[in-house]
Amino acid sequence: MLIQISIFEVHYGIFLLLIFICFSKVSNNLLNILSYLLIILFITVISSFFQKPTLYNFIKDFAYFTKPIVALVAGYLLAKKMYDFSSFLRVFIYLTTVISIYHIVSILTSVDFSSASVSKIRTIGGISNLAEVVVLTIIISSYKFNFLDVIENKLVKKIVFSIVLVSFFLYFSRTMVVALIILLLAVYGYVKITSKGLKYGLLVFSSFLLFYIYLFNANIQREKPGLESFLYKMKIAPSEIFTPVRNIDPNNHAYLWDHWRAYEATLAIDQINTPVTFFIGKGAGSMVDLKFKVYLGDSEMRYIPAIHNGYVNIFFKTGIIGIVIYLLFLLNIYLFAYSKHSSQKTRTINNLIAGFGIYFIFSSLIIGEYIILRIFICL
Image (cartoon, rainbow, N blue to C red; front, side):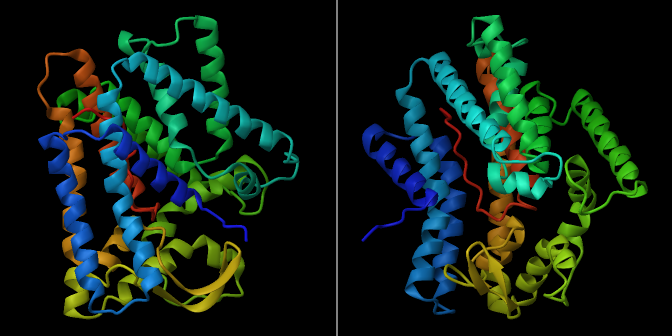
């Protein structure tokens, strides 16, 4: 019998293997960060006792909530074992470039750009790749920070940058665009609350505001191919996230998918309807009732284990206490920007870590996957 293994299980197994191979003493800083995730995990286990989920759903959610923990530990231990930071960055950049080439080729050979929609392109090529955002950030920043300039040949550097940039645009990912802006601001030290940081933050906010003024005044059609369908998704993003939707016609597919994230988030919040679930959620193994069956992936489902909105997902599983702990966790990541170090290299890496904290604050609105910090950091 052929056993199917998901990418989640592959990642989990790799992280456990890295922990076993690289096991050593961990720092107090890492333990401090892990404490927030362990508290969230503890809440999911305790609250599940009040709901009596199936064993399969409980184990699935337990793995889902422990993955960030094993990922952080694996990344930390691997970073301790790697003494040549430049070689690590170089390998990471080249591996990402190979993946980018595969992404570009798969799209060019499978998509008719004269009629293809953004959703069709993303179905074939995937929805995002955060590694490309990191590579673009590294290459752009390398012109200021010498320790990031790990590709000595300038022509090769330009070719790598061009390949990754093309692949980046072919994802048509809103979160990747936001991530690149945030990480670039972070690596230059502009995410800290300073006069310069506030100035650049206001500039970025004003640019987004003007962009959305244009979008809301432009006649952008939903079903148009290419860039216009991507701009349409940008246009509906705020309502897709924040507008409560309780009644929806499952036969009206256009309206359904344009408001799907808001609909599932609204239902999840409505189903937290007791004092106990408000404080500690419904726990590991709990399912959101969609009120009707819908095809998600390859199967028809009415009850789903997770939703797109990460904050609502954590609220559904761990209640308001879990949300507070999660926000404290992200705040702890962001505060790396304020660490005092004489080394320019350490300050820059800490700024980048803080940038991930800011990115996760925004991306949690639209990415239901419990945030996994696969950042190789020596804390």
